[in-house]
Amino acid sequence: TVYSFDLVAANERVTVSDISNVPLAKGKIDIVVFCLSLMGTNCVEFVAEANRILRIGGIMKVAEVRSRIKRVDLFVKGVERLGFKLRE
Image 1 (cartoon, one colour):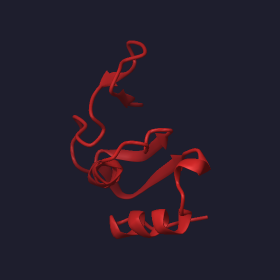
Image 2 (cartoon, rainbow, N blue to C red):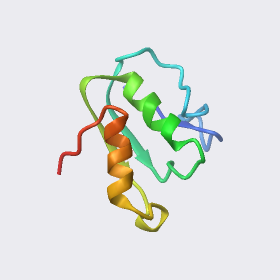
Image 3 (cartoon, one colour):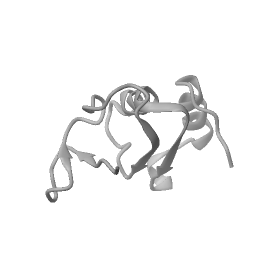
Image 4 (tube, rainbow, N blue to C red):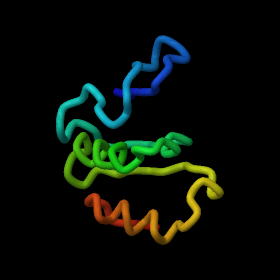
């Protein structure tokens, strides 16, 4: 099953939701993908929510415009503090 959440539903396959609090159970998801969605001021909450809904061993992928993340090294450290490990 694929779930898609956004503040605005572009079509019927998108559920309107603040991605810092999605309507999914803890540990339900295998993969979380953030695609151009970490621009909000509460992106730490977005990543924490991804950690909540991911199963143990789940994967988070980030596809973001590099210019939005001024210090990639600091971004990675922040994500690691939220329970993730970088795999290249």
